[in-house]
Length: 147
Image (tube, rainbow, N blue to C red; front, side, top):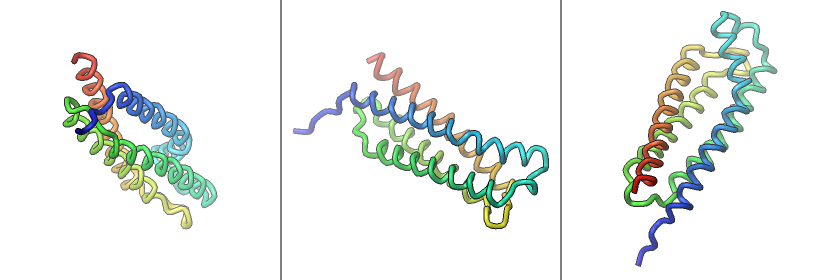
């Protein structure tokens, strides 16, 4: 007989992923702001190889942490009544990680260049995915608490 997923444990893991992803985002935000400001003020050429190498490294470390969370999410046994929305959550999180990787790829640290168009596109993708993740988390919580 198959064991039913533990709802309390499921919610704990979801909550831990949300909390951890917020921490990772906060850690990466100062690096993001440096590039965002440079793009907005037309000062990308002021960014040095060292700055961009450091930023790219920060982004890579954070994205790796997101990949671990994505893996945890995809192996998490969801209660039957939230299975559909859990699959949407997995998809949104995957798209978020892809957007993060695209942002990393927009940075050419060795040549002190940022593809601002690719950076902007990746930012839009991440924002859309974040909205999707938030929606899914709210729905999962509603469904489980309103049995």
